[in-house]
Amino acid sequence: MFGKKKKPAKKVLIVEDDSLLAKILSESFLEEKFQVAVVDNGLQVEETAKSFLPDIILLDLIIPGIDGFAVLKKL
Image 1 (tube, rainbow, N blue to C red):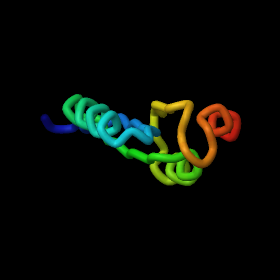
Image 2: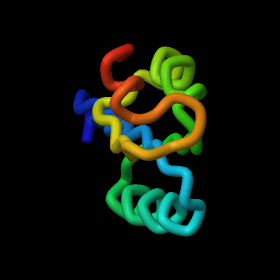
Image 3: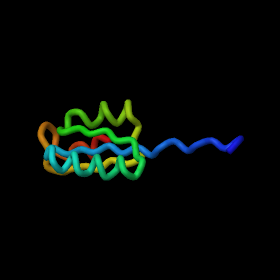
Image 4: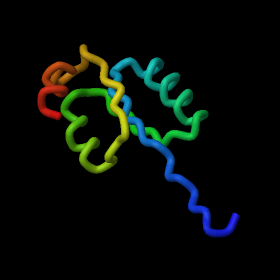
């Protein structure tokens, strides 16, 4: 109603190199009204996280570029 502001959607960054799994996860989060960004390698995570500002990151550990463990240390 009047005076109530709608809460912004929570944001999730999905880091997954398996395109089918990334699609399934993305669709599941979108159904729950999350804003979703998906990247498929470790090299894209830092830049995407800085611009997208996710509330949570779902991080695959074995990904191309920089593995998930190295990404986690950088973040």
